[in-house]
Structure formats: C-alpha cells, structure tokens
Length: 295
Image 1 (spheres, rainbow, N blue to C red):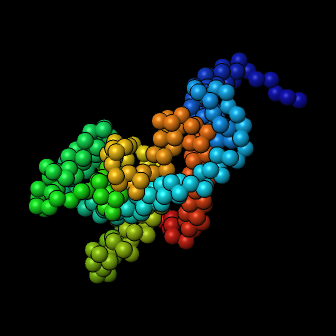
Image 2 (cartoon, rainbow, N blue to C red):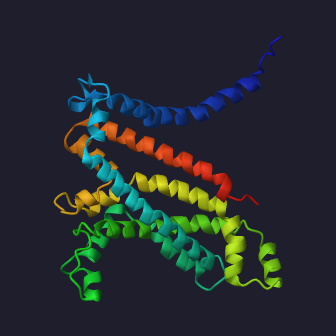
Image 3 (cartoon, rainbow, N blue to C red):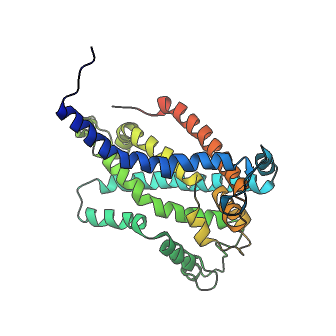
C-alpha cells in the first residue's frame, strides 16, 4: 500500500517546490526557451520584430556554409582562442605558484592581478584603445614607433588577443591558487628531502596534481574564447580596415541579427558555432582520461 504523507512531509515538499520554482522558471524562460527559439529561427526567414517567420529549411545553413565570411570569422575566433587560452593559463599558473607562497604583500598582488575581472568591459576597451593608439598611444611612445596595433590586419588579431589574456589572467590565477591549496604539503617535503629542486617539484608534483583544475580552466576558457564578442565589439570600430581579420563568429551573428535584422541567418551562424564547440568539447573530454590525474 502507498504510504500516506504526513502533514509535516507535505509542508516540507511545499517549501521545497517554493524554493526551486524560481530557479526552474529562470532556466526555462532565460535558457531553454531561447535555445528552442534559436534552433527554430535558424530554419526560418524572420520578419520584423520576430513576426511573420517563413520556414526556409536549410537555406540559412547553406548560405552560411557557402559564405567566406563565415569561415574567416571562425578562423579568427580560433586564432583568438589560440592566443588567449594557452597564454592565459600558463601565465596565471606561474603567478599562482608565486602568490601561493607566504610572502609580504601577497594579498595586494592578488588583488592587483584580479582587478581586470571586476573592471567594466567598456572601461577596459577605452584604456587599451588609448594604449594602442597609433598617434599618441603609450606603446608607440615607449617604442618610438608608429605601429597600427588594431588597424593593421596582420597584427590586429594578436593585439586583441593580448587584451583577452590580460583580462582573464586574474580569474585563472584565483582558480589555480585554490587548486594549489588542495595539494598536500607532504609531497613537497618528501621531494625536498630527496633533493628535488623547485623546478623539478613544479613539473613532477604541481603540474600533475593540478591537472584537474587546469583541465577545468582550459575547457571553460576555450568555450569562453570561442564565444568572444564584447571585447572585439568595443575595441574594433566598424570602419576599421582590420575588422574582417579580427571579427569573431559571434560578432558576425550580432551584425546580421541586430544591425541587419536577419535573425534567421544569425541563428544559423550561432548553431554552426554550437556544433563546433560541441565537437571541441567532445575531443577535450576524450583527452581528460589521458592528461588529468586525480590524487
């Protein structure tokens, strides 16, 4: 026989539903519904204000795959990720190792390196645009050169990637410090007794035991880099000659969806990016068992 719920159990269930309902509604309204709408719109020619959608099948995907701009923007996105992810991870790891030690002013340095994460993206873009300015920028004044950092198609994507690295180092560093504090100190004491140098300890103990944290950071930063938009949107002007060599696929999505009102084509671009990210994620998950060590 089915057990009857007591009054107390019913009250607990009611309170449970009361607590999880706002989260469930938020997920449905802000996550699930937009995803379904995006998939649907990718198969449509959308009308004004999202009304009057006309089903066109795979026409948007065929057009997107046959347009050089799509592949160029995807290549630009990959190039940006190649700069931001490895440099952001390596520099943050080195900083975390030094700042994890009990040194004078450690808290101050941690705060300084984390500051870019709490700065408004618009403010960051304004500062870096001044640093990169061809006429009166700080970098050109120091180097006594006249380099077009963000308007030369050959180097603009590198300049934007450097901003991305600078912006994310603090976040990566905090995660690495958290991971370092989970490594037992006994390992380092035993290695020191055996005569292992600091560099040897770093590669034989720190790197392997920190691999779960490193994998998490790499995976999340790859996804973040492949979906980059705000940095490029605020640093690169629409009239910039280097824009075609820098714009990400999300930037192209924004251009077609909101500037030109072609939301169906923009949705198709997003779905292509989602498919690419899923492939990359599957590859990284397959590499986890080989490169990640859990102590």
